[in-house]
Amino acid sequence: GPAAIIMAVGVMMGAFMAAGTVPTVLVAGLQVITPGLFLVTTFILCCVMSMIMGTSWGTIGTIGIAMSGVGLGLGMNPAITAGAIVGGAWFGDKMSPMSDSTNLCAAVTKTKLMDHVRYMLWTTGPAAVISIVLYGIIGFSSSANAFDSTQVAEIIGSLQGLFKIDFVAVIPLIVVIVMIIMRKSTIVSLLSGAVTAAVVAVLYQGVSLTDIGSVMYGGYSVESDNAVIASLLNRGGMSSMLSLIATFVGALGLGGILNGTGLLKPLFDALTKGVKSAKGVMVMAWFLTLICILVISTNNFAFVMVGTLFAPIFEKYNLESQNLSRILEDVGTTGSVLIPWNVGAMFVVGVLGVPTVQYAPYAYLNIFTPIISLAIAFTGFKVLRTDQ
Image (tube, rainbow, N blue to C red; front, side, top):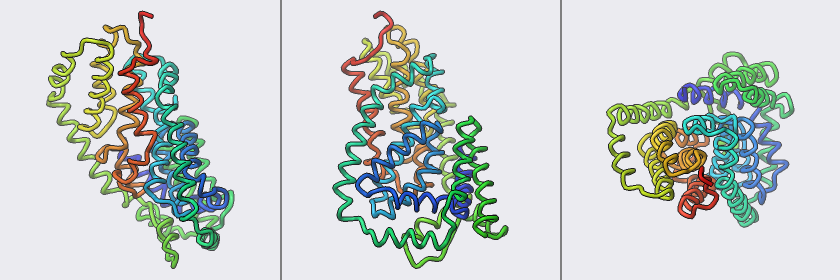
């Protein structure tokens, strides 16, 4: 489950550092990306990556780590960079036909998968456009004063001194992406990347066998006078993820207790009693999905609970099922990563090292998608009805 994925990401991060995979992507990013366009590029890159891979966690653990490093090198505020990474990563988590949540929400509400995906474009599309505009504005207004080209040159020089920077180092990343596109499980894909990275580190970067073992468990560490280099490279390892797993297991346990004791069902029944219109049904589904992700730290509970309870009510009010499946994702998938005790948010903090309260204000896609969704529920714009 998710705990195993968290461990696998920790192992892979350490191995990716030792193999020079992340340093090579960093050098390429620092050479190519202009500071003004950095946030827009990061957001779009993470959108594309998450659409291809169908996983926000896989996106954060691969391209997300690299882009957060490029941002540091360009002198960008880490919270804003993390917001752009999160927005892009959760774009595909919601819109990709390969994503777990996309398939689950379609299945629970008995909606055809591609109908569900197409219908979500009405909320996610505008939110993505707003995100790109805002990241562009921030990028161009902050790039002039924060950018230090000598520091960038220094970072590139240091990385080239520490690693062989070329195509061979990127092979582990390609392995992960190919495995995920081939629909292998996330854990198998990440661990395959970690093993490939270990081989590259030993045979190509000259890391000893004993060192690669300790890197995969305890994380990569390098002595450097340059503080930015140290903060870029000293991360990863299975042990760095253990406190995250402990919190995660506790949160899941609490969710299980609330669900198992049946405390939530009477609450739902009481709340849905007063609903007398199609608009009311949609607004209520929106709020109950929000309550679910606030109370229980995993989205799947919200999808199954709200999806199952509301499917017959939506039918009664002649609302097509994709209205419900979209609300589940607009609030449950994109909104959840803004809540500090949600599993996805904990994962982001564990990997990118930026607290939820700091990156959340900049995760524009995740903020605007639920707002647009609620506006559509209220106005009835593009609401599909079965009696039309």
